[in-house]
Image (cartoon, rainbow, N blue to C red; front, top):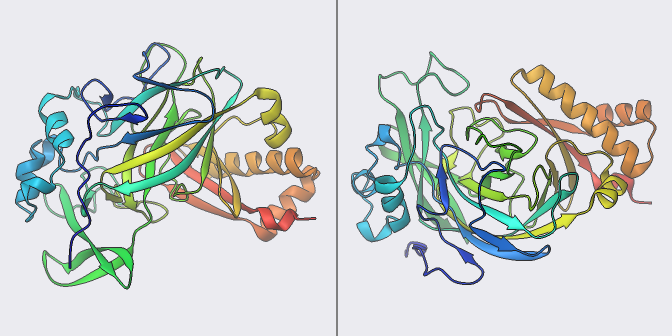
Length: 356
């Protein structure tokens, strides 16, 4: 059985943004003081390479060629941009782990507008990934890892019954495996925060960032409140698969080549469609998904419920008490993640429920 192709960096050119030392921030997210590394018109698309931090970080040796060779990966299947960023990228002590590509200027975007990011295509760049559990992190800090070192589980990608699946061992590194379907998405999608301080890459915020919402697969859209002129969008933290919660700390982390469409939604149009949107909003074929973010999971749920009520009021004309009743009867409130300092919740409001 032939492995999927390895998507090494392409030469820079129109419509393509590679992941290089000049186009990637490591551990921090763009702010209003940063200069764009690419520009697209509203409605324009861009293909962007992302690089996973797994295999690149200091606690894994900061040498992806050696790290993955120890797991049976041929050097030709290790991404050249990962090797370059590990050796030449700048990450300060205390910064986050993530590698983010951008920022990307979107012509005409202004604070008060929404930026719609459509996920057009997500291509796995390698046929493997890593799931890590680090000390002091995850849903069970102090209980796991059970050894002094970081635990990083290597998983291969295989074709089974015409579907790509992740495969990892049930115990240790040998023996029968467990397999699960892939559903690639970008854990980090955001716009620059206002001001001249780059946010830490771990906690998400109103600007997006490390949302880890697994619904953001191909064919979906993310709306973000624009914070600075031209939005200065960015992406990173690529995943092959994740369960809601992301309880170990990471999901199946692996690099993706993403094609995205960036569209400015002017403020008046945004308010007419959604009401006042103050945080990330996801749209799929089936759902509208307002979000709630806070260090306290209870508060995150409350914020998500309030955002959902206001969305139903603005878009569908529901009075607020009836909107709350509908949410209680018909809407799931899912935990996006509990491991990024600021916890995330998203509601899944069925669009079909409001068909005339």
